[in-house]
Structures are given as structure tokens and as C-alpha cells.
Length: 101
Image 1 (tube, rainbow, N blue to C red):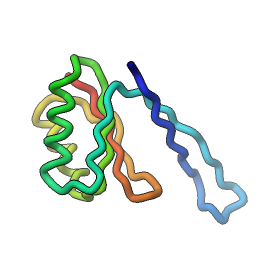
Image 2: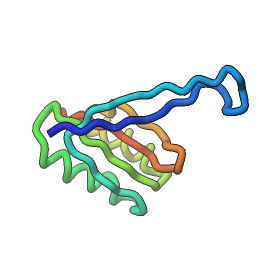
Image 3: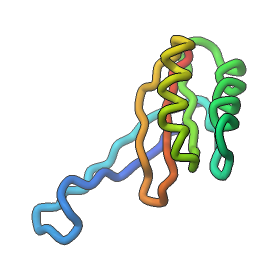
């Protein structure tokens, strides 16, 4: 069962009359909440989630550890999984979308 994440993206500053807010949608198959966990736990939770889904499926991970940005890039590079998108949400949570190889 696919789930959809919605994220609002701001183009321009909030105090500008030219600010545009757009909506991005991304479907995913499994979600991992690794908020509050420190290295290496977010990557280990991702690894476990990827073992539970088949090839081509997408896992969304939420993490608060700033080092998870580099950790996820290194993990996907070493394992061949695809880091589709990553970003930081307004509440300082990092969001990652990883496609199983």
C-alpha cells in the first residue's frame, strides 16, 4: 500500500510580496521514524526497512540527527540503493526517500 507525503516548498522570503508556496507530493511504500535517534541507528533502521520491501519500493525516513544527511548519502552510494530526495522540514526533521535497488 502506497502512502503519500506532502511538503510545502517556499520560493522567496516569507516577508516578500513575491513569495510562492508550492506543494510537492511523493509516494512511498514504507515509513521509518528515526527521530530522536543518533548515528548509526537511523541508517540501521533504513537497512532493516529495505530488507522488508522488494526492489523498486520506496522507503521514507524521518530523522533528527544532522549527521544522518552524510550517513544516508554514504549508505546509498555503498549499497546501490537510490537516494531519491532528501530535505529538511520546518521543524528541523530531515526527510529521506530511498528506492530499493
